[in-house]
Length: 561
Image (cartoon, rainbow, N blue to C red):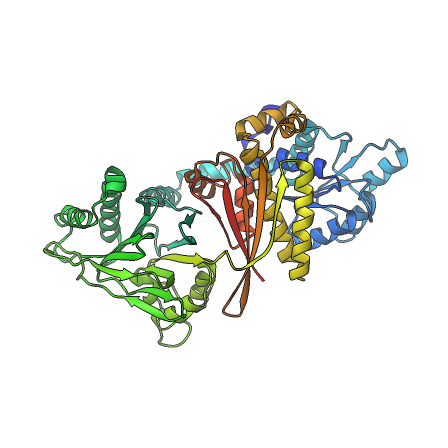
């Protein structure tokens, strides 16, 4: 690891998390060395195959450091650097070369090259060059200034209060259990489940949970503490904690009626005289194609049917209070449904930029016109004028991936075939899109996730083993050895879905490995800087969403044309 290779201050490592590096290198194997050496420690690594492409990516991205190969095609390293220096004389640049020509070295120095890496590339030389360049970029005075400021902030009362609020919010996130964090549903259909949780304040009166009861049953809970402030937040969080506790104990033997009764009886003595909770209890049965629900003064849940009409599942109970006695459970037939939206009052009560209208006037139309949670989120946040309440919603969309296949192919478990797969995928995107940025993002996600399928899926390489091999400079030789005995395949399927005059491309990658515990994804996304798994984070950021199957050996990702 970098820390073990070089004696470096924590502040430099912290600084690395914010930087983007552009690497001009046409050799795929060398690109992989850069990627595997740096990706866990920097914000992003952008690769270009030649100097011309590198200069274009430099112009179109916020680049902090450039690594340029002297022998880059079309526009060699020095020529590209000259173009960069015409407009930016400060950006740190590392030149990679095996040349010992004094004139080349002099030219490089005149162009303010900050560091050199000698070919053949070695991991330690890369990390040394980047560490030293990062020091130049941030400066020792900056390090000391930030260290002192951090100490002062900790002594400041306001900062301390903010720190306590951050801890409280972190606790809330631990309470809101989600068994479907970036997962899809696999039954007789494939479905995406997405969530938006946007509290108005740190201490939220909203809460939700999504729990896998069995392979075919899913439980959703949405809670809205009526009122604002600490009291509403405490009631919502205590209630949610208890519901999750019941589910953890019952597991697949969950009794829906008993869950509702026990949780109401538990919260009643805790509620204040004038206090109440609005709650959605939703049990989705994928096999019997029905929803069992008990809605306590919550807004109507929306269901989109196959004919693109909207059905509303209305509340069938008053809010939960100290004096509640009985409750109703009803059922809804989901055999003709394709999408669901469960949400709290805060979502529809927010004012919008359209005069006196609230978002309640737009929610059904926006839901109908949205294919993904991101579509719904964009429409919501654009329309609301000022957020005045907590916003929570759960978005569930069934996908028909059997009738819309535009390409399908299998690839062997080898670096050579990964290159072939990448070329094949890029060609497909060039045929369907002229948007270079979109095509690049799709290629980035594909490269990251096929590499995961190759390394961690079919070859079964763990993150710890990978780091050890990189440190010992035996990574590629080990891969070559493992490839020889691996007969597993990587299957790629590309779907094209037309929805409300929009076109979505859905790519599926399936490996034949043992999979992984997908619950680890919540740690990756909530601690994306500290946690291994940066490739998955980059994939999420460069797409509309990534979704793993429960086993962890298949992933879908989406882009909109």
